[in-house]
Image (tube, rainbow, N blue to C red; front, side, top):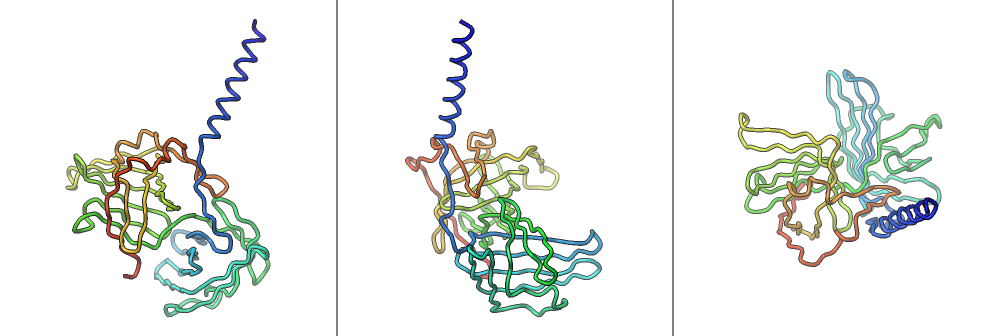
Length: 277
């Protein structure tokens, strides 16, 4: 009897795992010769003297390289151009088109080629062309150069403000005003969020902040057009119970298939404001 019970338990656990896996839907990029809106970052030094190098690679084949120095004085240079990625050779060729006035040494300027040694979900190992040594940059995936999206006549109510390096502030006004601080990723028709905190109230004396430890993962369905974004009409305060979780592994976002249905989804129209406009 005990042996039969053990076999039944193993069967149920095995099938539960199988069902759990088959109910996952993978959201991923189909790009092979470009990077899908990635942000690579690296800094060296200490709090008093920091050199930084940041790359943003757009899926359309353009790049932005920001590098500089912070400590006592602050210098920053932005270079924009196009890039050619060769996955067979694991290298990126950079063609500069426009750069700010460069105030640092040539050692800090935008290189003409980047050699990749290893790519993981969260890091990229590169080869220094000067001495052949390896160095690591943090890798963030599915970023945007949009500045913000807003609903209505201005951006102070119901809006999302983005940074190119993966942070966002979301303001929603339902029964009260709530402001969420998150990390974000935009891929296909989804805005994936890692929510860090929620602040309620508008005036300083009334504000109350609730930190989320660990961060809460959720997502919003979207449809991005040239000047507008269709954003799922959803109250984020109702999703912080974890019923819209997602997993990121092997450059894929995995969500529950039951949450992937497009039927009966209501969307609000948001104005799209793109960087440098």
